[in-house]
Image 1 (spheres, rainbow, N blue to C red):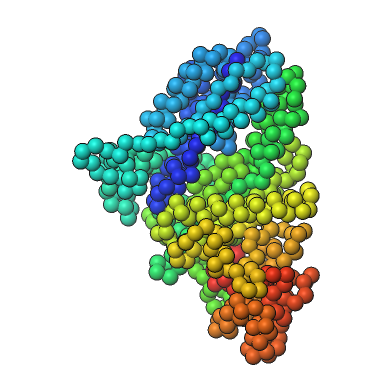
Image 2: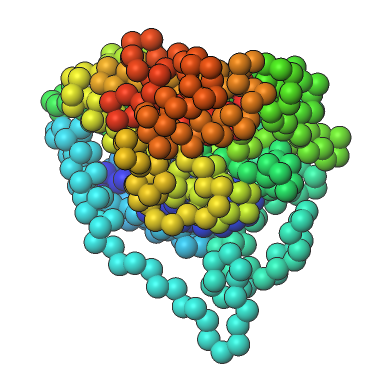
Length: 551
């Protein structure tokens, strides 16, 4: 037998290398196709007997080791960007690689596909073989030669999105005029092209998982996410990733180390993966349903959020096209525990938190018996025309910061497992990484102005660094005691930068010696100094007071 694992490399620049939402959506669709539909179709082409049903689902009643009715190929797992398949002969594995590679080269130019083969005998441990093959896959990714595409000869027209030679002129769509595009961009645009008024391939895949309610549809441009032009035309790029999922999958293999348990291992792996995929999809559906419910409560065409005095803090006006409202929300990557979506900048934190909470809720009973699946998320809030690749890179970096903070808590608190969140406003340009930015803009003599990253629930290490504390502060500054006193809040913000003494002076001079809002009952000192343990308890809340829209 021959075990084949299919993966992709360099997918982040491939998906998020353009400022056009259509191209990002099309790229995400092509990546998903390469490791699911196209890979299964390649198996069908080279193997007469397989376990792929006409619907694309895997038939659990068929097995490659069955002596009475053996298969030529059995797909073990397809999901989360990976594809595992067993072939009875090495020649079939080579044919599969040839067919799939040709498909990707022609239909998804510049998508980097990585395929690894490993000989396998059913008398070996399949779990150990998959682990060894993954190691071989990692080594292959590190050793592969970087692609150096030919940048053109003689007189050429360059693609505006990739800088590669153009091969065609893309037709104008919406606000986009006709423009020369490379083969890569042309393939991405074909994936989002509507034919005869029907939804595109990418839209069909999204609608199958997240069908929009009647009267609503997903936007195809970043400018259509609900921002008010010139005032609040900001978007949020949200990247969320499950915690320790790879470790949990490997742990499943450790339960079935004996070759006699190979079939049990396959069943356990499929059951776990299906449950995670289903839970992640349901969590996204819950996010969509709650967002739509909020929109409908506000009249069906907008979201209005007012402070305690009745003054509108923020308004998200939905764009209307052909009698349909465009939602201020568009998933780009959705499959398994890895999710990336864009939305109106003022909804980014609310939607990210809602997704993580729902994911935890729907994964309470995972078949591996290790409890719920938590996640970490990064939210980058940027101007709508900010370079999208940089915005995603920032969201990804923020997600890694949240994961690192979670790891610090786990190292100090043992088996604690919770979700963490980090965010950043890039209201102008970005200079340096997030650590450098925070050192420059959020570090003062008294310590850190920001509590970020924070835990979504209780924090056993630093009880002040939780989203609950930040959210309570936001509600206080949007409440009746502070809502109508913007100048006073600005003075407080400056005082917080100066340190505890300046805050005490502010309370005496501007607040009649009244303390600041109580945002954390277990801590003393915050209400009178604004600081505790080197952290400011109010700066994040003040920064979000005019931006955060709860669902």
